[in-house]
Image 1 (cartoon, helix red, strand yellow):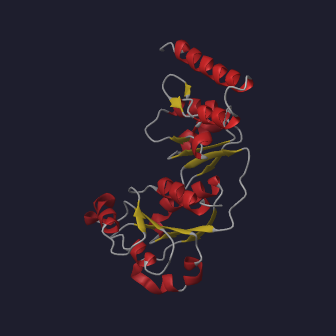
Image 2 (cartoon, rainbow, N blue to C red):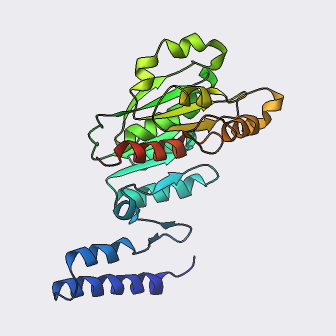
Image 3 (cartoon, rainbow, N blue to C red):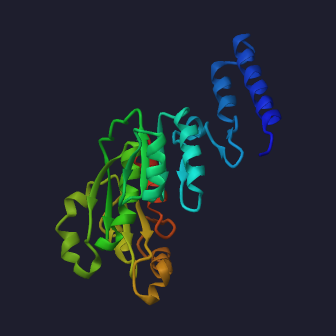
Length: 259
């Protein structure tokens, strides 16, 4: 294991210097906070955790579990648990959750969303809501990743599932719910036409999420991705394939803008 003491000592000295300058009146409180925002990370050798991300962006460091060793996820979780009030981890399977739960007793798991989270302080839900819509029931795991993430961040969420364009009457029967949303996340596989249809009947941003659901020519989500990028309906922004988390992050920022 690499020795990180000199690096950690340097950061500690920098922190002491900033605090001393504030104490001595050399810099204002605003300047002090600005400098603290730019302090780097918690170094645990195999990972550098951005512990000041919340201070800079109002959103905490997020743990992406897929591809990581379970032991690494547990160590990251334990480290953040000492620092952060709320922690969220995405793309976590049952094995990861069980390992985390052994160490963090108040960790919760939403299996369909593949999300582990801890909330020491639950946010007050927003008055305005983000509507999460799917074309089919096969898209629900991606939708739940988005919905659970939004609820974790404090956005009020409404869900509307299985209203794909193969039956437009299903969309039209929920116009009030759709048109009163602050932001809409539209999730679809197959040909991915749902976001364009939704965008044509609302005056709010539509965040499109292509999914890897579909037959061969769907190309594991490439087909709906290209359809969404080429949508003739204005007001559609597209995130990556199956990226419910990314859509939720953006939707939460829009939902809270100016509030």
